[in-house]
Amino acid sequence: MLKEYKKESAFIQDLFLNIISIKILVKTFSMFIFVDGKNTSEAYSKTNNKFQHQMDLHEYQGKELLNSFGVRIQRGIVAQNAEEAVAAAKQLTEDTGTGWHVIKAQVHAGGRGKGGGVKLAKSLDEVKTIAEQIIGMDLVTPQTSAEGKRVHQVLVTEDVYYPGDSEPEEYYMSVLLNRANGRNMIMYSTEGGMDIETVAEETPHLIFNEEIDPATGILPFQARKIAFNLGLSGAAFKDMTKFVTSLYKAYSESDSSLFEINPVLKTSDDKIMAVDAKVSLDDNALFRHKDLAALRDLREENPVEVEAGEHGLNYVDLDGNVGCMVNGAGLAMATMDLIKQAGGEPANFLDVGGTADAARVEIAFELILRDPAVKAILINIFGGIVRCDRVAQGVIDAYKNMGNIEVPIIVRLQGTNADIAKELIDNSGLDVMSATEFQEAADKVQQVLG
Ligand code: GDP
Ligand code: MN
View 1 (tube, rainbow, N blue to C red):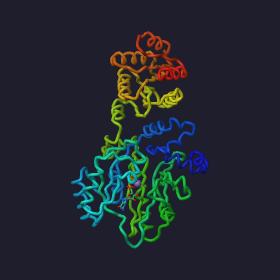
View 2 (view 1 turned 30 degrees about the vertical axis):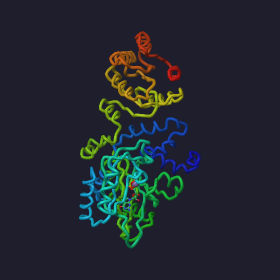
View 3 (view 1 turned 120 degrees about the vertical axis):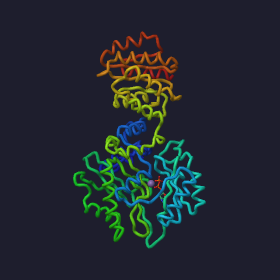
View 4 (view 1 turned 135 degrees about the vertical axis):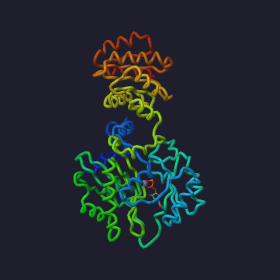
């Protein structure tokens, strides 16, 4: 798989890296990110999400955002239970004339259709049974873990694949930032409705790419080119130029980092609309979009990660057995590699930041130890601004305060006052092992894991 990937042109690779870097949930793809780091790629991929600073919206929220910028969408009403779903369906029939409805699980993961989270209902009875079935289920898709994601609500939509003069057609479209040249990019394909990763692998020539200068925004000729490349004519062509133009405006003015509309639909009566919407906002810009910031759904996020965030700790939950506490993201990445080399698996990524005092170290300990899989903790701190002896004292104080830490702890402190720090640890009488060199720390991890 990797070999085939390497065979692709450099151009396509660039394109991929852009979309990969923001499509964090696509685990199958994450293995391509770092060629020799296949061990830690999932960790990189998950942590990358944090570095990208993005906030994902639900489909229904994304669609509302698009609609507010004049992008045509498949209309829908969100429902928390089966009764609300039936009421929503009745309302949609009144508003749109639709006879059939689609019930769509609202979770932050794609591929819902494949996992049974998107279903067509041909009567109100079916709306009720399907909604009952989907709400409360743990939806497993190619983009979730094996446990899946709990569905708390569904979007009831009009059916837009109705028969008519022409066949409905599905396209793919995303808007994202091309980091290589600082321009926005509209990536699109005639092959909608399926994974873009598959299209990219099997038929890369069917993926097009239009660069947009952020200073001018999308120009009319570019919108026409996109409609033309998608093989459209007549009313559908015209509607597509409108669609693309509004879509780009929505992306730009909402300070988003990714829009992915898959599928964009051409209905049998030549209307262009968004049937799905994956919207990721740039959370560095959320301060100027209070209304969008309020759309955050904490139920979709890992509760430990949310709690860590409240304490200013950058924490990402992973599946391994060695907890790590590090300052600085780069050192954290290197530490995860080290753990792998020592035969362990990182249980988490944790960047305690610049102020590793006792209080923060204690919170960090507590968060790490909540994971029953943790068999050892590796603390790897570089004392640049923060002094190593302060950190050491923090570790010792936290350890004493908590009292009941049963897993071995390896502490490597390097930098300012590292020697004093080592002495403090060694003389503390606690079950804490100190290490000076990176390799030494790795050896000790190996030793305690047995
Ligand atoms: P995803 O599986 O998470 O990407 O969810 P989507 O919103 O893309 O929906 C999955 C699939 O459901 C789409 O690719 C369509 O094939 C199908 N679908 C969505 N809306 C309708 C609809 O109105 N009518 C019909 N018949 N199928 C639909
Ligand atoms: Mn989709």
